[in-house]
Image (cartoon, rainbow, N blue to C red; front, top):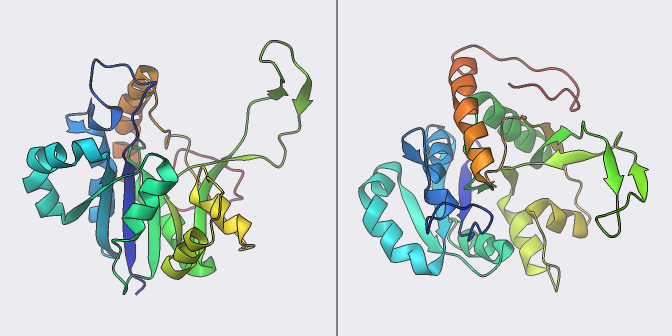
Length: 247
C-alpha cells in the first residue's frame, strides 16, 4: 500500500480575516480550531503515515504549548513556516520521511473535507502519480484591466478552480522545488507544470472552500452539517470532472 504524508500549511497571516488579533487558522469552528478539522480527517486514514503542520515562526512555541497533547495524540510534527506559502511548504517537505511515497499539501484554512473527497484525490494520485482537486467554473467571468470597466467576457468552458489537498509523488515534488528558480508559485501544481509533468484533476467539492473571511466561516459552519450527513452514506462517483456535486 502506498504511504502518504500530509503537509498542512497554516502559517498565513490571514489579513482578510477580521477577528480581533486571532489568526484564522486558530479560529474556532464547530468547537474546534479551524486547522484541526482537516488534520483529524487525514489522521483517520490508514495510508497516512505522517502529518506536518507548518505555522508562523512567531507562533511555533505558543502552538506547541497550547495544542501539545493533541498534536502528540495525532502524531503531528510542527515546522516553522517562511514568509511566503511556497517557502512554508518547502520547509514542511524537508521534514517528510524518506520512505513516504506521496505528499499531500493542504491549506489549513480548508476545514470542510469529506472522506469521499479524500478517497477520490488519493485514488487519482495512486493511479496517475499526482492529483489536484478542482471544480468547474460555473460563474460568468469578466476581464477588467482597471477593476472598473469590463473589457471582455472570458470563455469558462475549459476553466477549473483548483483546491487542496494536492498530492504528488515525494520525489517529483522535491525535484520541483529544487528546480523552482525564481518562480513563486501559488500552488504546488504550478511547479509541476513548470517542469513539464502532466498534472491530473480529481473531482473537487463545492464545500471545500478556503476560509478567508467571516462570511466563509458562516459557510463552513453550514457545510459541516452537510458533510456529517453525506459521510454517513456510501458514495460512488463515476461522472466527469465537471460534475461538481456536494459529495
